[in-house]
Image 1 (cartoon, rainbow, N blue to C red):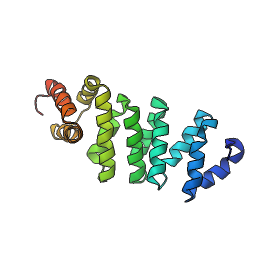
Image 2: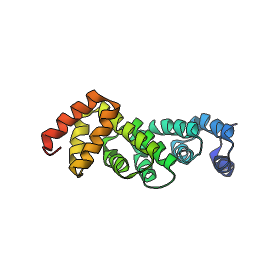
Image 3: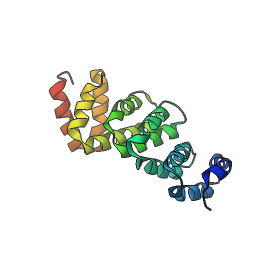
Length: 178
């Protein structure tokens, strides 16, 4: 199966809307032959798929585009099914762009789905591991109540106790009420 997006656009959209996971994976495998703009569109659509393995692979592929896809992923955090929000958190965690910290924190504090919360926590941990000092500075810049900051720190603690201690020490320097 060779993808010629301009000619096969309708066929690809039809496949992406179908339940045929095998064909969707073939599209995913052949995305390298498509220009970045169209590839990103297809991958974003795949984040809405019902198959977790499809969404997970699409999220990892999207992460390879780095900060270019962050705004689109942040929009997905605010809408759609829980699995779409979870996949967006996964991709944002892989990218680890600190500019997205506030969006992920917002999901962590407001979403009710346990899978979304798990992925949001994991995303924050990945971001904090990459640049702990800068993550702490970014976290200090977010206007949240002390109880919300404790929730964020607890998410870090559950995933990586040493990282939690480091971030907590860096945030306590700025906020004495935590």
